[in-house]
Every structure is written in structure tokens, then in C-alpha cells.
Length: 519
Image (cartoon, rainbow, N blue to C red; front, side, top):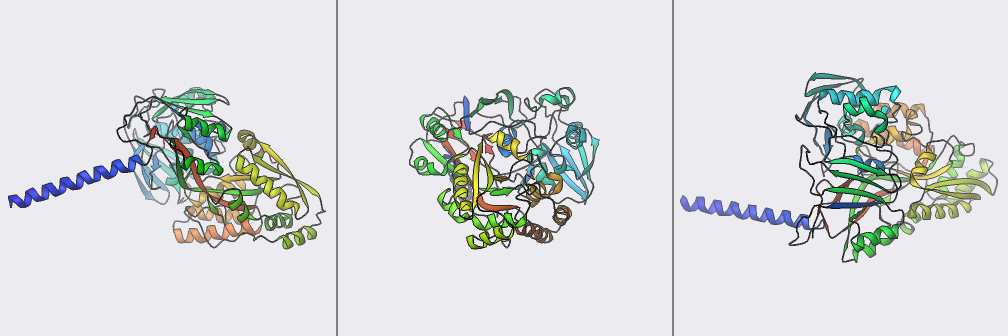
């Protein structure tokens, strides 16, 4: 019997040792080096463009949210690496009925300005975003919340107007960021440039157009970061960002041109991180524009664009051909939705039926990303083949975002990065009438039937039924040629050998809370 116990003990120890070795091996694939040690220090992250705002109630683009989400600000619940909902500021929750959700909060947590995180702070956060006077473009995303009830110091209940299937996923996204009640009351106007959350990093400075710095929160309620400081530097030139990583001047670059993949993979100092994304790249139409208000014109352009040629020629097959504005990783995606095929003859016929003359001018707007500019030039050439004279307009990313919220553009190249992994985030923000402008509907599209379907999808608890609802809505949007789906994203980032523990999530957030700089 003693021999048997000894045997079992030794077997258990062997398993534990093997597991430890396996864990070390997994970590080593993320930039660690054998025998290296953590040195703290400053983590330098390079970006192609500056943030547009640091107020989560006003941010409408993931590159801006990436600065603060999970870093300065935290949410009641969060996504883990497998996209499962896990506790964060709330340690547990209960859905008491279809419209009542109660959250029990972790205790003893402080905001960066010393204010207590408790049920009152949760109420103050939601009251701010839901107040029409705040003017938040995120308000409609949380408009299903009818009342926030403080049950106890650390217990809060959300009472909804109607059932809302993706509630937890929206609470885990940057829209659900918990904000300091003290900052809301005393300096709400400063939150766009001075965020105050509970996260592992504290905001330090923002030099507009240059850099944003965060410092480690030494009083963080969770695991304190291993780096002392994070600097997000704006470096517009692709080649310069790569050179800075390669030389060791910086550690991570968030945006990687597909043309540089071979260079990175053959480098002895750089590493490439690839992540299948939730986002879709598309060509959009302002359907209120005089020329583009005619569905036949939009359909003609849709037929004239060779999407497969763009993916192979511009993106070197990084990402996959999209069949809607929803990627295959999204809950509610359908493989059965069908966009317009490439058919130049049909495109010319439709333009003729619409009475569009040869040489008609149209403007194509894009941000200054290298691939997007190249893509615009391909589209320009393809549309010339059906008699349209395309003028390309290139803008810096922040100016591009501003421009497409003014309703003055015609055709534009953009993408939608789903932060929640649920179809509602795509459909409501991109296509619902209430989302026109800053919230995300830059097509200025309005269809009462689509609005009704999107609202049904929000409240339907049965996922199979939701899938059918979204499939119907997406096909209407495609039939009406509101946009041309091009590419399901594959997110790319480059990082140096000195970085350990870095990864990208499917929403393209740079996950740095566990990052170490090693030597």
C-alpha cells in the first residue's frame, strides 16, 4: 500500500512538472527568451494615428478605445482569451427574469482619483451615458436599460425595458467602462482628454498628434503590471514603425502592412502576431447623396468591384472574402447571405437604366492607411471600366472619422470592428436609423423593415431565431446595395524579442496588462 501511495505521488509530481514545462513553452512563443529576466521599464507601442477621444461614452472607433479599454477603464464583466464572459469588477451576477439583472461587485476597489467603486459608481456611469443632455453617441447601445437600482453598497440591479440577449457582451465592451463618479460630477468635460478608471494603468499625459502615456497603477486591486509605463507613440509611416521595432527603439506596432509580413517573419529581432478578427472591411455608400440615392447606381458599382482581386492583390490573401458586414466569428453570422457578384456587363446596364452619363464624377474617401489607398486606386480603375470618373480623397484617420459623420461624403472605404462578438453590435450600430452619424451608420441608411428586424434580434432569447432574423436583415441590406463587403479581417501586430506576454484579441485590442520587457 505504501509503495502504491509513493507511486501515485511520484506520478502526480511528474504531471505537475510537465504542466509547468508546457506553460513555459507557451509563454516563450510570445516573445520570451530562455534565461531572460523582467526589467520593468517603459513599454513603447507604435500607432499609425492618434486617438480621437479618451471618453468611452464618446469613442466610436476601436483604435481610440484601444488606448483605454482594459487599461485605464474596466467593465463589470469581461471577455477572456476564448471570448467567454468572465467576472471583472462584478464578481457574480444573476438574471432574475427576462428584464432584471443583478450584479454583486468586488469590494475595496478605488478609482484613480480616490473615489470608491461601488453600486453608486455604477449608477452614476449609466445615468451619464443614458442622459440625453450628455449627447453620447453610445446612448442607443445601452438604451435598453430602463433603470439602475442601488440595492446595497456593492449590489446593483439593471432593469431593462425589454429582453436584451447580448447584454453581457455590451457590458464587457468599452461602452460598459465604469467611470469615476467624482470625475463625472466635477470634471466631466475633461474626460475626453483625462480618463479616470479603475484599471491597471493610470492616465498620465496626452501630447496631441504625438503620444499618450499611461503609468502602472501600483495600487491596482488586481495583478499590478510588470512594466512601469506605457507610451503610445504616433508614427504614421509604416516603414518607420517597423524600423523602430527592428532596432529595439520600440516594442509593439499595432498596424502592420501586409507587404511587410515576409520581412518580419525573416527577422531575428521581430515577431508577428496574427489573430482572426471580428471586423469586416467594406466599401460604403452615403445613400442620401444625390447620385447614390438611386439603388441602381449602388448596385452597378457593387457589380463593378472585383472583391477577390482586392484581397489577393492588395492584401496578399490576409483575411478572407466577406459575404456581409459580419465576420464568421460573430454570433448571428450567416454563410447564406449573398452580395453582388463581379459582373461588368450588368454594371453598365444598370448605370444606363439609371441615366448616368459616361464620365460622371464621384468621390471616394479613405483614411491614409497604405492598403486602403492602394485599394482606392484599384476601385478607381475598376469603376473607370464602367464609365465613372473617381476622385480619391485621402485623409488622416481622425479627419476621416470626422468627415464620415458629416453626411457630405459619397463612397468611402471603412471597416467595422465588432467589440462584443454579437450581431447586434454590427446591425444596430451600422444600419439602424437611430445610429445615423457618429454612432456608426455612416451610410445614412434608413429602412423601417430593417429597423424592426434589428429590434427583434435584440429582444429574441432563442439564438436560432435570432440567427434567422439577422440573416433576413443582412440580405435586405445587401440587396439594397448599402455597402460592398470586401474582407473579413485578420489582425496583425509586430513585437520585438524583448516583449513577453503580448497578444491581440479578436476585436484588435492590444492586450498588455500581462506584458513584460525582458533582457
